[in-house]
Image (cartoon, rainbow, N blue to C red):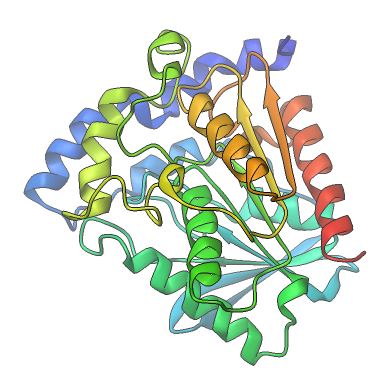
Length: 306
């Protein structure tokens, strides 16, 4: 059962959500791929500012990024937070607050990069940026086991795909992966695209059909690094996956969790009944969002060695 706060916020959340602008955005981007989508930041502005966190602009692996530094955090542990936005929008600035909430809960620093966006930079540019950032952190002296990948929606896809790519290459893996409502299904085939269509305020089958081709840039929607539902997750680090019970992506999150668990990966899956896509963006405004972030933070403390 969702809270009174969510009932009150639902209309505001829906008005800001990408589902309401997806068709127009996709049509305009088809004409002008370099259009400024800054207006979509309304969706991300709902997150309340966390207390006791400072921020520092940095260039990491050639990419603009922000360090979020919670008071008294362990500077030897770090999470890399890949923002959402359908692979075509969002930024380090628009996701700074939700990443900082998670970092504060985990007692670590967060690095929030501006990875390259589609359609000007289609897949696998995002995974190339993720690998460059990981290598940059290793060069800074961070140990792989003290690094976590995290992200939401499209960023959850990138966090997962980056870990899959490292695993494929036989590289040292990060200590953990945390994803909020990851967008895995590039084909919109899951049954919850139908069963949750009327209640999902953010993601529709049409949105996936509009945005997936811009991300893929001609690559197959079944590429396992773009669509982890086709991947072999054996050997991945511990995974924490969350999603809202009302979202169309629910089935794909549950399917990947089951696939990973079947191959021996340590998996924690949390489905929040009655809640939407990336409800953690309502941190500071809704108890379920705060509880989810607190739980993810506790889990990260355990996996990264508190």
